[in-house]
Image 1: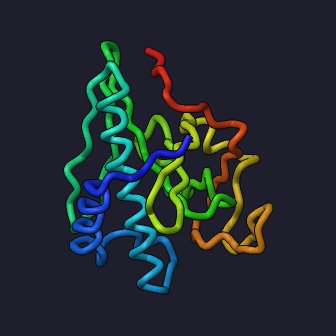
Image 2: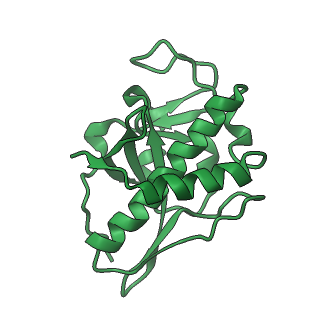
Image 3: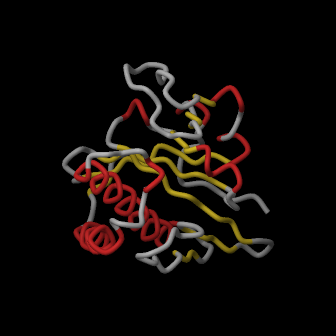
Length: 180
């Protein structure tokens, strides 16, 4: 299901890009500054969207790390249940063939789930694709080394440490219930 993106998501994301460009996605290996800014923007729009979406659709409280413009965030979102706190990392793409991509640097980060989404190139709507546990996302058979053609595309993987590509069939549709 596609959702229109509220102007609030755009405004907050643009502010973040303006202030954080020199510090964000430096490991992304993207030389074109316009593409890098666009990638930062789509990620932030998705993060703000899911923050608002979970506030409306979840029985559990959610929080977003206050973004620091000069250092990497430790997490995107956290949901607290009665039993524990879950750390969520939001992924967004404007190219469906890259949906489900996770940079290998996330292997050692304290994340419980990845939320994947597709945003149209004009940034008018978002489609939540699903959620995947970190354990499933980082399976060996999903790994694509650096400079290797990404299956189903003509594009080489640009992440120096490689990437994991989670097939859509392995994503759980949203809304979800977090298990205790």
